[in-house]
Length: 104
Image (cartoon, rainbow, N blue to C red; front, side, top):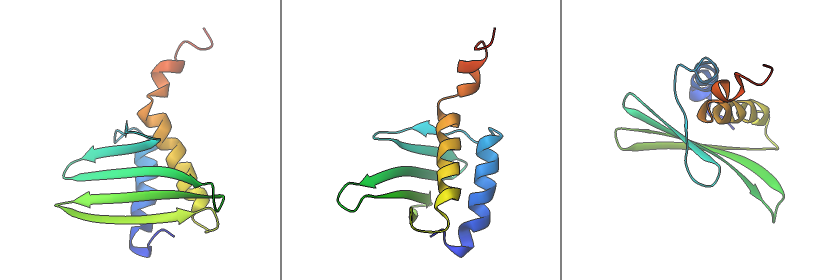
């Protein structure tokens, strides 16, 4: 579940990701990171084959402090995290430039 104190942050992050006000980069193994001001964000998606459950892991690192949380597919916030994760992928891959000439 998205912690109550971070709900507004996650919503604004999604908007800023879509508007390209921040920049995401691909890490390893379908993970992404964002360095912005004095903060680093980490975002990843995992599928546990044993339990057959998908989980998003999100972490905020600021001044040496790490604040992680997870959201599994059985939680109400899952769709919100899925939408943010997909926006993160589009942002990291700079899809705008890739698709500029698609219909030309």
